[in-house]
Length: 77
Image 1 (spheres, one colour):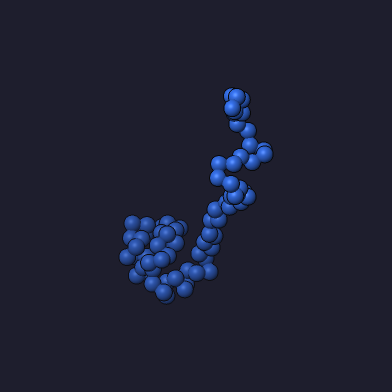
Image 2 (image 1 turned 90 degrees about the vertical axis):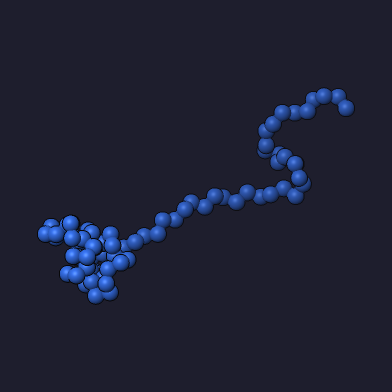
């Protein structure tokens, strides 16, 4: 109840708004309040970033792979 008054005073007396406010402040509420709310708290799912596929690197600097397209050097030597 103390945490509700400390963090969510503007949400009182609406129980749903108070609960949502306590969920938003779950990192700041007391251990006792967190223990009471924990069965009802949403699970934080970490967001995974997509991993780019690794491309093989050429050992020669400036060498183009056989699949690469680019202008051909057609000038005489």
